[in-house]
Image (cartoon, rainbow, N blue to C red; front, side, top):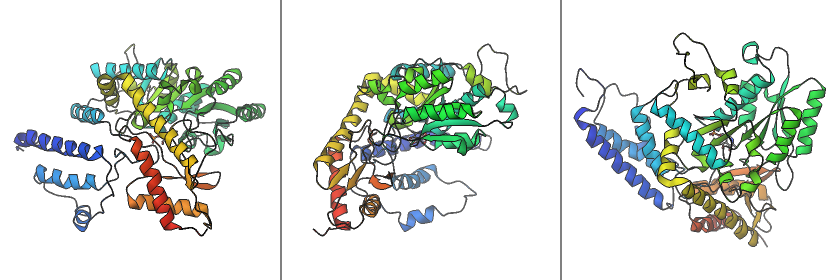
Length: 473
Ligand SMILES: Cc1ncc(COP(=O)(O)O)c(C=O)c1O
């Protein structure tokens, strides 16, 4: 560091970069195979993580060494047996892209020349990959923000001027599956509709899809009583079970009753590019959709996209005329079409991943996860000590329950088993409550997961399940 150019690495720049590259290479090697347990946070690390704010700096190499310990003691979704929630993969080329994107630190709020074209191109590639006729797409920090942005456009379409006047005594409503992600309620809260305005449409007991006759009835009842339907949110891959709502039927209802159709495909929509395409028919009719590339397109967080058929609907709700913002361009600035102001180059990691791996490799990786999910379901359903859902998985979530003859409470047992699995560390899964029953909920979305990991998951669940509750036959 020099006095006239503070906070730069100076002569240490390249050695620091080399050290970081070596750390990344070690991390990638460690992700190649699952590890047998998660390390405990020892006293030295605990002490480091409670140190006060440094007033003066220290050797960056030493700081990187400390950081490696912090990272290694963190739950990394990139590990092959991380099967919890909707995991991701920290795709290697995506991590490289992030380093480059953050080094250039381009701001996509206003036109950034090539970087802006790259964002447009990535949205076009993504739309083509999914089979959606988008007229525009923008990258956001996650499905929560993409859903909120799409629904903001829907609210302005249903209630023109609401962005200025608020709801002004009008009651609006959103409609979604009872098993939709809570980001829909969150959007209702933030958009002034209120979460009571979310109509949770019951799902079919077996398919877990939204029951469309009930959707139609709910919209018609609201219309008859003066409530304004703002949007239907169809889920393409519910977080709980991976169900895909009947998109074509939802599109028919939306078209007939004049309601905006948004698809929350944050998790499941990439499967529209695979042999599962038929279950996504109708998606091309949606007004807007959300897909998270940081979920099942494997790139590191955060990289979500909102794709729309009519970008003017976004301009109607997001454009702002501010003295410090150029507005005389023919093409609107991203800031006039998106919720956020400063926006990093989130699209870059997906762009580079498409460039390096190509769409076919993405499809093959998705098919592998789909096959792993089916294998998990088939193995568990053939075993007498596991219970599965009645239908084979639509996508890659596979709810499974461990059964022990004579176990007094199978729900308590499976809740305890999730905790035991997370403590054990060989496999990381999260729980799910389905129809008030407790399940384990592995989800296969990682490029590093191998077929053998499916067997390991069931073997470890069985071993720990028997240890918790030996049964009394
Ligand atoms: C279906 C669905 N929608 C939205 C979200 C929210 O996405 P994010 O965490 O990127 O905000 C999730 C997260 O798991 C999801 O599964």
